Image (cartoon, rainbow, N blue to C red; front, side, top):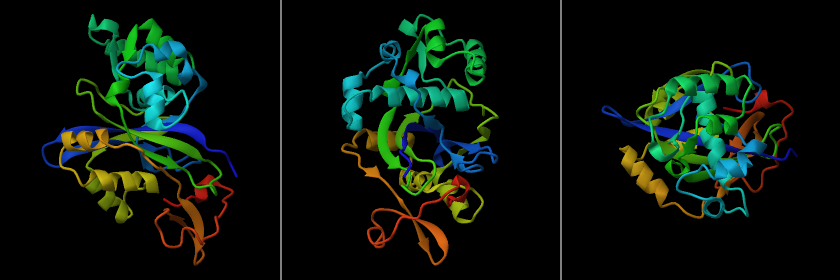
Amino acid sequence: MVAPKSASTVIFLREDRTDGFNVLMLKRNVALEFVGGAHVFPGGKLEENDKNPELYRRCRGIDDAEASSLLDIGKDGLSYYIAAVRESFEEAGVFLGAVTGGRQALDFAALSQARKQLNEGQVSFWEIVRELDLEIFCDDLIYFAHWITPEGSPRRFNTRFFISSFPCDQVVDADYGESTSLVWISPKQAVERHSRGEFEMILPTVKNLELLSEFSSVKEVLDWASQRRDIPAITPKLVDLNGKVEVLLPDHPLYESSVELFLQDARDLPT
């Protein structure tokens, strides 16, 4: 069994006159082994530098003790928030933050150049934050869900899901590496298109969108998410049902009695 890697994911919400609100989704490069071609939220695995104490001191509105308590872990809960901000910046060009002390507006040209250098491996996220004297708005992220990849997957992630209102003064842009395009879409439309086979997604993405489709505004979602506590970890199970790989959730009647199916290739994961 493969040990899951810690990861963070962010669902950005934006008001929409027609649908109430939309969510930001990326289309993963079809060449990627893990869910290539699927539509996902910005996110990825934690890096060691996400635990940098200097980055912790740059976080607004929440410290490590509070973050760790919310995530129900002993320490370094704040690293999940930092990873969420960093991955959103890397993959979609969205930076949740400001110049320290609010002395001046964000320099988006400088951020764009820094993002390019970050994605090319020339600089670290901490170096960008230090060089541009940035403050990270970790309190703009609301922790609301926890999913762990099935034990039978050859690649596994222990993922914390955050939700945030999109900073309206920013422009999104795919990184054209891991992601090839971006789309703003209503949760209901994404789920409906997925059910018709037009919009590829994995189960946690679908389930979170189903939850969000019950709300009619960004405010409703944020108010709901802010009240969630004692968030359980959901670990689906891969099983063979009539010769087909299926994913079962813990509330499925066959979940406990089914034997976990272990896959050799991440491309065989169902979407």
